[in-house]
Amino acid sequence: MRKKLLLKKAVTFSLMGVLAVSPVLIAHANPGAVFSSEISGGTQDTPDTPDTPDVPDTPDVPDVPDVPDVPNVPDVPDVPDVPDIPDVPNNSGSSSGGGSSSGGTVTTSSSSVSSALDSVMVKGVKVFTTVAGRYSANSVAGVIVTTPYSDVAAAVGAGTNQKPFAVIENSVCGEDSKACMMKKLEELKSISPEIVSGPALDIWLGISDINNNFTKVGKAARPIEFKIGIPANFKTDGYDYALIFVQSDGTTSVIVDTDDDSDTMTFSTDVYGTFTLVKGPSGSFAAYR
Image (cartoon, rainbow, N blue to C red; front, side, top):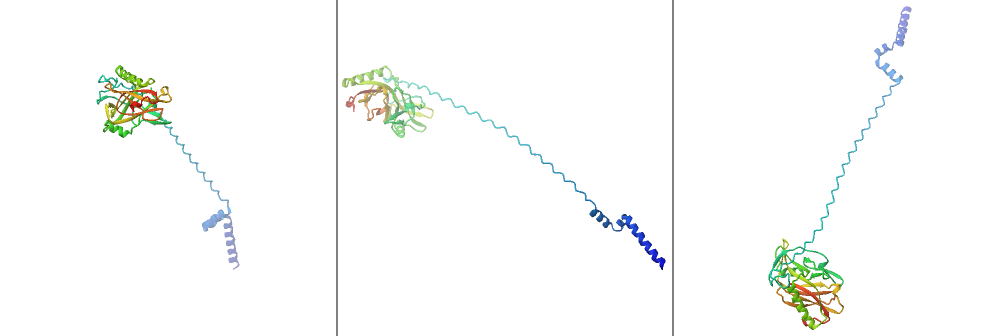
């Protein structure tokens, strides 16, 4: 009995020694216990610091597109030359030197000329013409048509693609016309010797078509009103103003002023030709009213 107990103790001590010196055996007997002991008792690996992700490349700043060339400022068109005012042909050999035979028409080129010559100062207010035309008479302080446009269009017979048109210029009348004017002037002087003549104008009214061809009328269907600015160098305080009118056939007449403004001469006519401004003391033209 004593031998069995000694043998049992010896075996027990033997096993304990083995266990103390051979963890491998324990691992085989209980693998989880060894790894658990090692993990809890050993220094844990610090995980590698995760790489900081590369800073994404800042995308290339897209090229700023070339600033498109500012288009060249278009050249300001040259101010078109004002066409020379063609002489209105004298087809009839008339005394007005630039007229047409009574009731006839003459066709020539037309184009409008806008300037200070198509306006007149009326009691301190600038008034413009109602009808387009070539207003080149610089011997006076402007000439305008004052009759409404639609009435002028009807008076000259303007149709589709046509418009009324005026040609008013310093007179280019011939010798015959001048002779007719002078004869009428002498008649006036016999009444009032102080009457004197001034600037002469050729005034025509007609139709301009879509191609800018101007056809003047010999006689309008109704009188058209005009207003002439009296030039400063022809004004005389207390004087009246009138016109000596020479028609294409040499007929002369005196046209009196119908306004009470000493700065303007207003008149109406349905026929056209050369108009010479005259002046005289108050009452000089009373016989022609």
